[in-house]
Length: 118
Image (cartoon, rainbow, N blue to C red; front, side, top):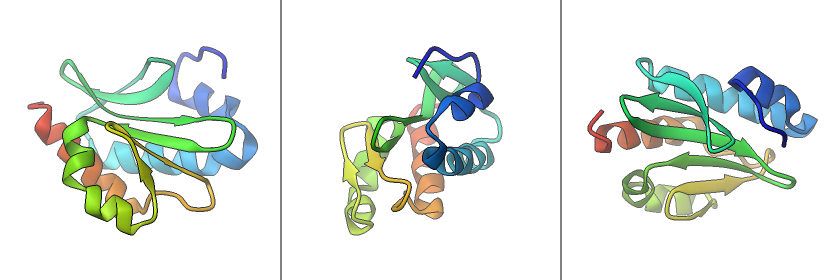
C-alpha cells in the first residue's frame, strides 16, 4: 500500500475484503488504549503511549497483521495458538475470515501497554 497520513486513509486504501476487520481492530485498540495517540509509523496505523508504539495493524495482499510488543505475544502464546492463529515475535497474522478474537485483541493491547511501562 502507498504511504498514508492517518488511520482513515490507511483503511480506505486497503483491499475491500480487509476494510471491515481493520476498522474493527482500530475500534478495539482505541477502546483498550484510551490514552493512546493514533499514529502512522513504519507504514502502519498504530497506537502510541508515551514514546512506545504499543499496538499496530496492517493489511497485506493475502492477510492482515496485529502487532504488539514481544512480551505481549509471549504472554498470550497459548491463547494465540488455541485460536489457531500464527504468531511471530511481535505479531499475529490472520485472514479476514478468521480474525483475532476481540477479547484477545484487548488483552494483547493492554499487556503490550503495561509492559512498555507507559
